[in-house]
Length: 354
Image 1 (tube, rainbow, N blue to C red):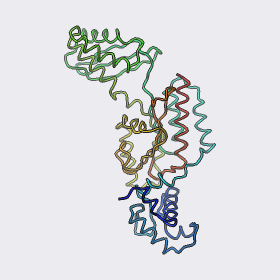
Image 2: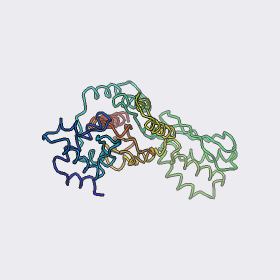
Image 3: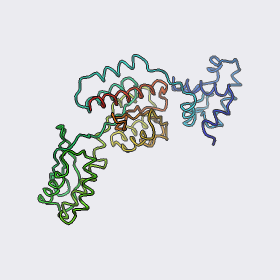
Image 4: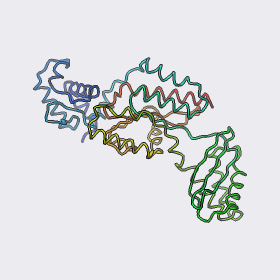
C-alpha cells in the first residue's frame, strides 16, 4: 500500500475534496456521510452518482469504509492518518479555551502535583475527553533514606528530600534480610546520599557498591542493589499518571461495542499500563503528536486516539507530558492547539517554580 502522502499527491482535486468533506463530516457528526449530503456542499456541481464513484475509488484505496449497506462512508484509520498528516487545518486556540486553562494555572497551589491535577481537570473539561498528565519525578536533593521491614517479603524505603518532600515505596527485598543488614544498607546509602538527587545517587551507588563489595555485608549489598532497581524502575510510575474526565467518554447514546471498548480503556488506565512508554512516545520529538487507533500502543485499543505533547523544564529537558484520549472521532483541529498550549504553560510554570 502506498504511503498516505503519496496517495494524497496522486488524488485529483475532486477526490481530495470529497475525501476531506467525508472526514470533516464524520468528525463533526460521528455518522457516515452520504453522496447526497456532499452534492449540497462541494465547490463544483456534480451528480450524486459521480460522487458515489469517487467514494468507491477512495474505498478501494483503503481510505474510506462503508459500515452499513447504506451509501454513507466513514474514514478508515489510514484515512484519518492521511487527513491528520496532510489536510488537517489546526485552528488558533479559542479565547474561551485559553481563559479556562489560564484560570487553572492561576490557582494558588504550591504543590506541583496539586497544580497538575487541576490542569488535568481543566483539560478534560475543555476538550470533553479524558486527560492524561504525566508528572515529573521529584528531582530535589536527598536528605535521608531508610529501609523498614514490613514482613518477610515486603519492605518500605522511605526517601526524605531536602525540600521536605517524602516518598514511601513498597518493594520485595532479597530473601534473608535482617534488621542489621537493613541498617547497614541505609548507613551506606546515607553516607553517599546527602545533597545528591536520586539519579545522581544511583550512579554513585552502582560504582561504590562494586568498588567496596568486600566491605559490605552480602545481604546489605543485595538490599542496596534492590533499592537501586526500585529507584530507577517504574515502581512510582503509576502515581505519576493523573487521569481525569473518564466519564466524558461515556456518551448517552454509546453503542454496546463502543461501551465495551471504553471499559477496556478504563481497565488499561486503572492498571496504568506502559507509562514509561507514554513518555518515550513524546520524547521522539518536540511538539504535539497524534496517535490514531492501533498506532496507539499504550492502551491496547484500536478505537481510541491520543493527542499528546511533552513539557520541558528550564534546561529544555523533557520531564513530563500532557495529553487527551478519546474516540478516533476527535476534533483534532481544536484539540491540538489546546494540548500544545497547555504543555507549554505547564513547562513554564514548573521552570518558574524551580
